[in-house]
Image 1: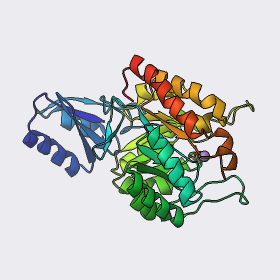
Image 2: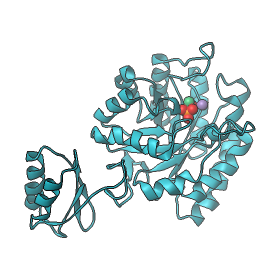
Image 3: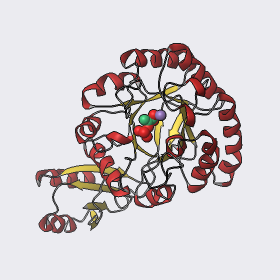
Length: 338
Ligand code: PEP
Ligand code: MN
């Protein structure tokens, strides 16, 4: 349930209510809006607790959250969550946030070339995996710690922020030392041990939608992270598996406005994994922006034909620059800044 405080409630009133809830064995999460403070009550629903809250003069009303995702839902947090990283980047507000770069860190030179290309195209965040979840155990698995070291160097050289994937709960600490945003890949969306570990840290998490996850399962995965106390979760639609073989996945753009209705969390779109085909990336990027996405994650490689992973879906530096130019018109028409 959520407890809505009277408009103009003072800090002492809010403390009185949160203390009482804690005495009753509940966890609390405060959300301070422009006019009102709302207290998210975490724990089992109990009628007598709701009645006790309704009887408090400082409380305007008690609302039961009907959806299974409590902290991720808009019922609890009506305003959009805007995540700020440094003083350069916000995600979920008026800016269109572009994250771009190669699928994987392959070597220092490739990473630096990709970073310079995405920076020239206007991106402020470099994506690249050091730990790679591959379908085949015989495929390139990523440079792991060495890859993180290269990412650190490239951040220093270019000033770009870094988003990179973590694959299990045992490497959260080392990835968090490098990443500005920690990526949870589609294959790990329901790795609950990993999600719990990410709830304990204080860094934004980019949570990709699972290959065959429903929107509710995806929001429940976000709930794991939020309920641990990490409120900075960015959702990423990256396509779901359907019967259609021409594209690698089916990019579910209806998820964008739907998630916006259900949740306050920022949502970005990855048209590279969503389609698997570089030729489709520009059109689907524009469509994602028109659908209300807060940002894009796009694979860019200095030489896609030689990429160790996901070359067919990677844009060249020139194609990326053209795309970011083309996005400006769409951004203008939907009130986003790029
Ligand atoms: C990636 O971003 O390179 C990746 C592996 O994506 P996904 O988890 O969406 O397949
Ligand atoms: Mn990839």
